[in-house]
Image 1: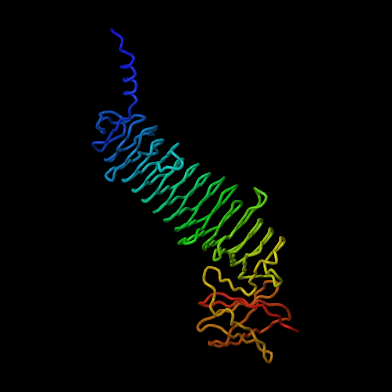
Image 2: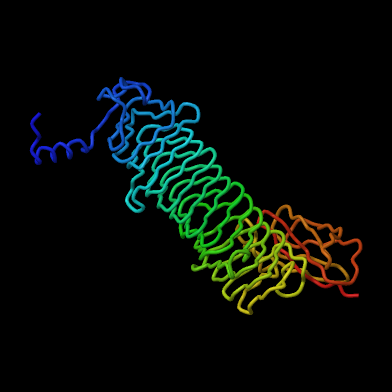
Length: 413
């Protein structure tokens, strides 16, 4: 047989590697040639267009090319099957797989665009992406060396942000959120962590000005990073600043009005202002509290400055401490807090400046033991009746619809 000219051989080689577009024509299995317009199974390097319900009976690895799921298309896994792909991935339809792994795309140019729905047991991505649809990972969602922007809804049991930027403008819900290595989670939308927020190594967690909601229903363990709160963050459990892994974790408030309300607070690192920390229960400082920070313990057991339950660290003189309980955890400060007074006249204690309506009173001695007491009356001025009160220092907590306030006073012999 006569040999082909060199130019023809080169043209043939180039033609054989040219990208081919393969589109679905009927509902069917990925592995069935009849599912595709080419009468063949898609190969690496092909642009795959799914415009019907295509089922993956086994794991599929698709390298190169592109992957597009149209509004009428669906990619459905059978059992534990999943998809591994390095192709740019665009979904306008629905994806339901045990595992979706999107690898080796561009870190800064969107190579995942989701406007439809993605439901997986596990999802991992190492590329730039954008979501304006719904992404749900029942078990885990991993961002590794990538950037991701959420403008709609993302939910997962465990979310891991490692060496990645996750920018949330929509709704982001996770039972556990871990920000690790040089990862950054930046919230300007609604972020709800149902169990545990962990910021470790060089991770960073930011709550930007204008954020709709940042709510940790469990505990927040922040071990490192330049963490910025420009808006409000609620921690129902314990807020723990911990230097177990690195010399000094750094919690910083760059904008006035940044605040965290927490059930419990334990500082083993470095907290800096301007900003406000409001604690509902236990407050412990074993690290450094820097000037510009306002810190308020709503239920103090100590009656000496800085009015924390435990202080073996450093509280700089520039720290503003709220010994009167002016920081109402979980709500706004009472409007009448400056007018609340406890007055002793003719051997009787009288509270003035109270709001109308129901007010609950709780009295504690210097050891934190509760002392029986009642409020008599229903107006702005009410008598505090204490059947038995020994000389010493006491804290009176008053709770109403306006919030909780505390007054410290001394019962003299």
